Image 1: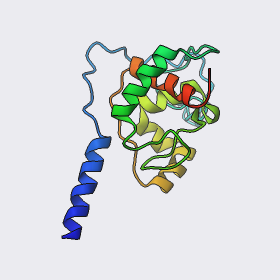
Image 2: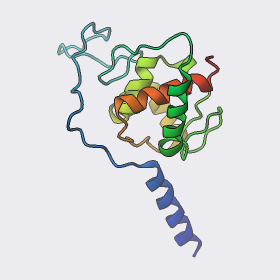
Image 3: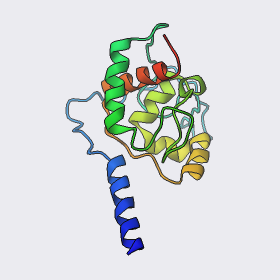
Length: 162
C-alpha cells in the first residue's frame, strides 16, 4: 500500500513539473550565433559556451532598474510553471533554489536555459553537477520568449534588484 501511494505521489509530482509544449508555429526560428565566443572543436563546429549556454539568445536587454510590472507577471508565470520544483530561497526543493541565480549566471545563459533546457543539461558541466544533486532533469516548460523574459525579471527582483 505504501508503494502504491508513493508511486502515485511521484507521478503527480512529475506531472506537475511537466507542461504541454506550446505550438512552435509563428515562433521565431533560432538566429545564427553571430559573434560566436565559443571555441571550436577539431572538426570546426562550435563547442559549448558555458557563459552563453545553448539556444537562440545571444543578447538580452535588461535595465539597471527592475521593471516591476514585468517581474510581477514573471512571478505569476513562475507560480504555475516553476514553483512546484523550485523555491525562491537557496533551499533545494526538487530543483535548486533560485536565490542569487542572477548573480551566478548572466541573462543570456538564464534565458537559453529556461527556454532550451535539454541540450544545456546534456552539455553544461555545472548543470550536470546540479543534476547529480537533484536527480531530476528540468523538463522543458514550453515557455515562449516573452514568458522567459518575465521570469528572468522576477528572478532579478528575487535577487534584490530595485
